[in-house]
Length: 306
Image 1 (cartoon, helix red, strand yellow):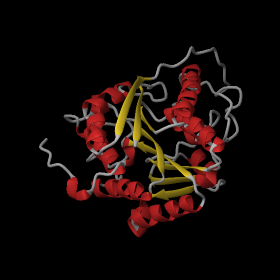
Image 2 (cartoon, helix red, strand yellow; image 1 turned 180 degrees about the horizontal axis):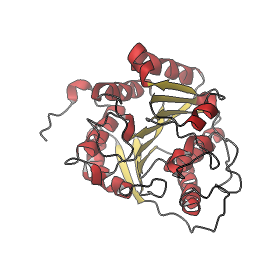
Image 3 (cartoon, helix red, strand yellow; image 1 turned 135 degrees about the vertical axis):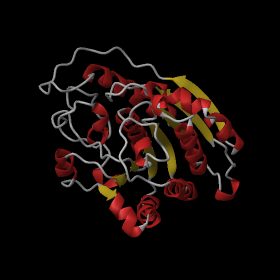
């Protein structure tokens, strides 16, 4: 497979500095070499630069960097659309606001292919705030609301070409949701599996149901993996740690099942903050998880010494 690495050094959506170093850390951790060892052809397209930010005023004065995020979203939607014409784009973040643009662009491509786009959201948070509901003003908490076409973004974010239907969004690993987000997402058809669901049913059963649905619809699958989906004990390099996340084996099992499904066509790796890491362990884990997604088997795992 042709894999296209695209760095997105955006940190305007979060309040803690450091995510802009994420793409470099993932490259340093050997992402390209790992993919090539698995037999894939890899092109590194370098890092995205945002367009010029325009003055934007919004009644919610808590919003942080709205003009900059709008500019990032516009350029990322164009790049995701263009680069998804051939091969598998892998977007290296950067904070999770980047998914507003990547998913919007991939969704436009899926419409032209006449195949529905599904999104697997691996995250501790639903990121379902709108510009009106966020109290923190951190726009990395808004991408799902935006790319599913929720009201309140018109005139501020770029116009959506093809919204993703909420019934085609599956969230796994959720364990920290603001009351306004909870109220809003409960009114949609999105599937939200919190950590209790994983504890009770196991991640394999939950994911298998979603993958079966996608296969039956001949859909495309975009995977968005946030570092805080993982338990902080194995992935400390994130500014939004929430205890009780996915274990090492649960995360790898998800990636192995995704590979076996053959459905994944694009990937986000987001919220890696190398400034908070321990000797690169989180960056290395993300590369290892990507390797499982792209075909590495359990028996092929390398022995590592930290």
